[in-house]
Image (cartoon, rainbow, N blue to C red):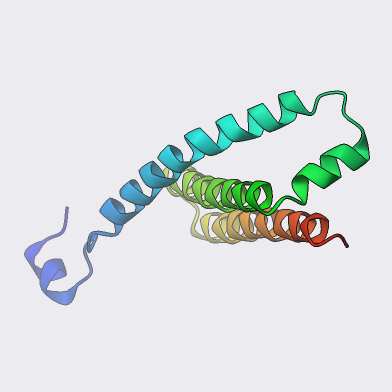
Length: 124
């Protein structure tokens, strides 16, 4: 809740919370069919050979869906971690360093996973 002076100076929430709320819901909705696809993929390839799974992952449609899952999940994870950290950590230094680590962790997971999928997809 911003005071009138904060509203004039632009120091209030400035709809940042609403944007985060909707981005969190959007990624959650996107993750539902993507996770269903992932479960189907894993179950259908249970017991398959390494080469068979690798060949399936090199299919452009499968690779795109996997990349969409990776990035949507990483964004969703980053938002969730940020909300938890902001709600429960009160020490400024601890909160700032935790937010930085959460951001780097989410980005690292997304980048490493993207690299793996791209390498498999392009036959590297």
